[in-house]
Length: 253
View 1 (cartoon, rainbow, N blue to C red):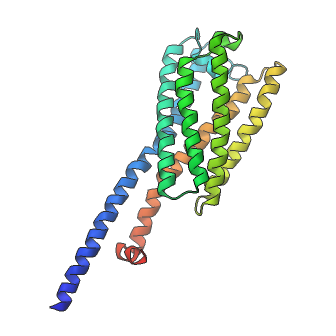
View 2 (view 1 turned 30 degrees about the vertical axis):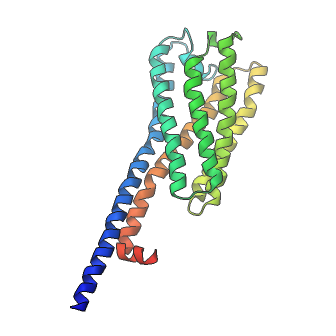
View 3 (view 1 turned 60 degrees about the vertical axis):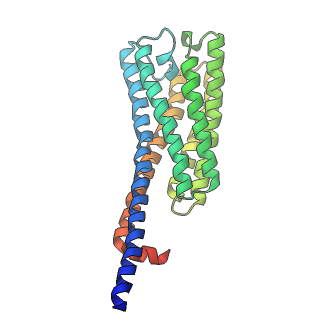
């Protein structure tokens, strides 16, 4: 009889813990699924660039900047702004999820700070570029173009700061070092391309669009990779639970 009650007690305790564990896993899956917003945002952004170049007869991806596609007076600008707004909203959502998941997985606080910078960057980009699109191809320094350039400077500084902070914080965190090194490599590429940007503009070299695309496409590549990496994390946890069993996991706790 005593053995029977012991089994019932153990079943209730471990059964309750197992239920709580599965609930936690489902909660994690919601956040991990949301992390795919980053990959989707990167795809949406690339579609807007490719489509804009196709629709604008004579547009050069090498000479012209991406901002010109949605600038005032650009052909199909209104349609393309739908894509950029959608991209901006998805990017803001992704930034929030990155911060939440970094906290959940106890990633180093430096990376958490970088996630906050990433959120600031995407909010500034979404609101700022919507309010102040490029005018006349950026050739005339109007108030709108001045604000556009000021927002761009803010976005670039926040982007570089965010990526270096996230990369270094991930590198300091066990099991996140590979994605940390990848992040740092992308940050270095962006910095080098950023240094080349004023040189290209000051010397009026016909490569403004190319240099800008190195910066932005590197950011989109990093966003896509990090998004998939964060999405894969709960699958690794599920495999670990199935391999060892719930009771073994609880005993370790």
